[in-house]
Length: 166
Image 1: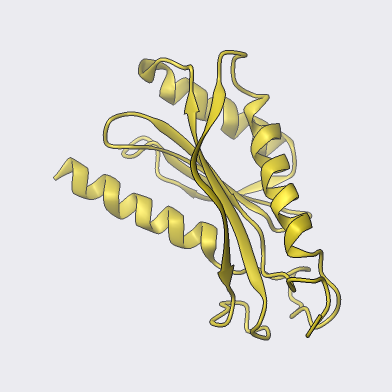
Image 2: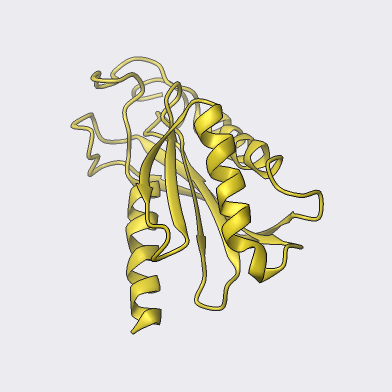
C-alpha cells in the first residue's frame, strides 16, 4: 500500500510539474516568451541553484533528459502550439537517512528565494513542489519507493521560438 501512495504522489507531482503556467500572473501570453532553448537553460538553473542548499557531496545524475511537451491542452486558457520544458535528475551522494533533512534544506532555500509552496506532502510522503513567483518555473523534489531523491523542474508554457507562430 505504501508503494501505491508513493506512485500516486509521484503522478501528482509530475502532473503539477508538467502543467503549463502563465507568463505573468493573470495574463494569457500571446506576446513574446523566452524560447524553448532558454526555458531549458532556466530549468537547469533552478535545479542547480536548489542544489546549493545541499551538502557538497550531493550530485546530479540524469534520470531522464530534457523533455519538450506540448501545451496544446494548456491549463492556463492560453493558446496552443506552445511547449513546456522539463528535466528530472536523481540526487546522488547523500545518505537515504538524510532525505528529510535534505528536503528541509531545499524548502528553506526555496522559501527564502522567491518560491511559493504549491504542495507539501510531508511528513506522510517526502514530496514538495514549489513555483518561483517571478518566472513561474516549478521545482519539485520527492523520494522513490527505494528512498532515492529526485528533483524536477519545469517551465511555464513558452513559444518554441519565443513568438507566436515563430
